[in-house]
Length: 227
Image (spheres, helix red, strand yellow):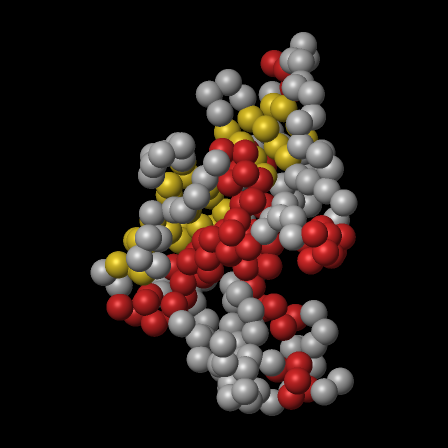
């Protein structure tokens, strides 16, 4: 492996260590954003897509360790608050990872899936991931008639990307959609790293009233990797 090439656009020349490669690089701030940045887009995508969410206005860490300057948190709970705006309803997304779980899990209400998204409504709950779903409490939905599928199945990210190159068509998770979604999980990390609640002005692309948090908004690339 060409380690210098592997370092890519990191902000500094970092000595090689076996904990960085091949998998655990994602748990170090020098390279990535931990579990929230790794998996957050996949799971928060479900609620964004289903509810038509756009941008949170406030991000708050509910439970987590003291921030570490080098490594990302093993467990974290973060709230993302969305104002009612246009078609976007007033909503709160609560993110859990690591040892943290929603109370419904601890109370035995939820099956022990490895991961998933839980929608909590006035008449029940929907537990889902990308391959299955469950309406809860199950006894209340025995006679429920599910709507007919309306979203065509994906042919896969790689094939969609190739088709977009060839035809100019949009992918399902195109940059217009995936870019803001990625910003959201990174804001959760900034809230953790500053141990604070942050207010987000998405129109100005600014964290307001918090100079320390704003320091994390930009990344200094190594020479030769600037954008």
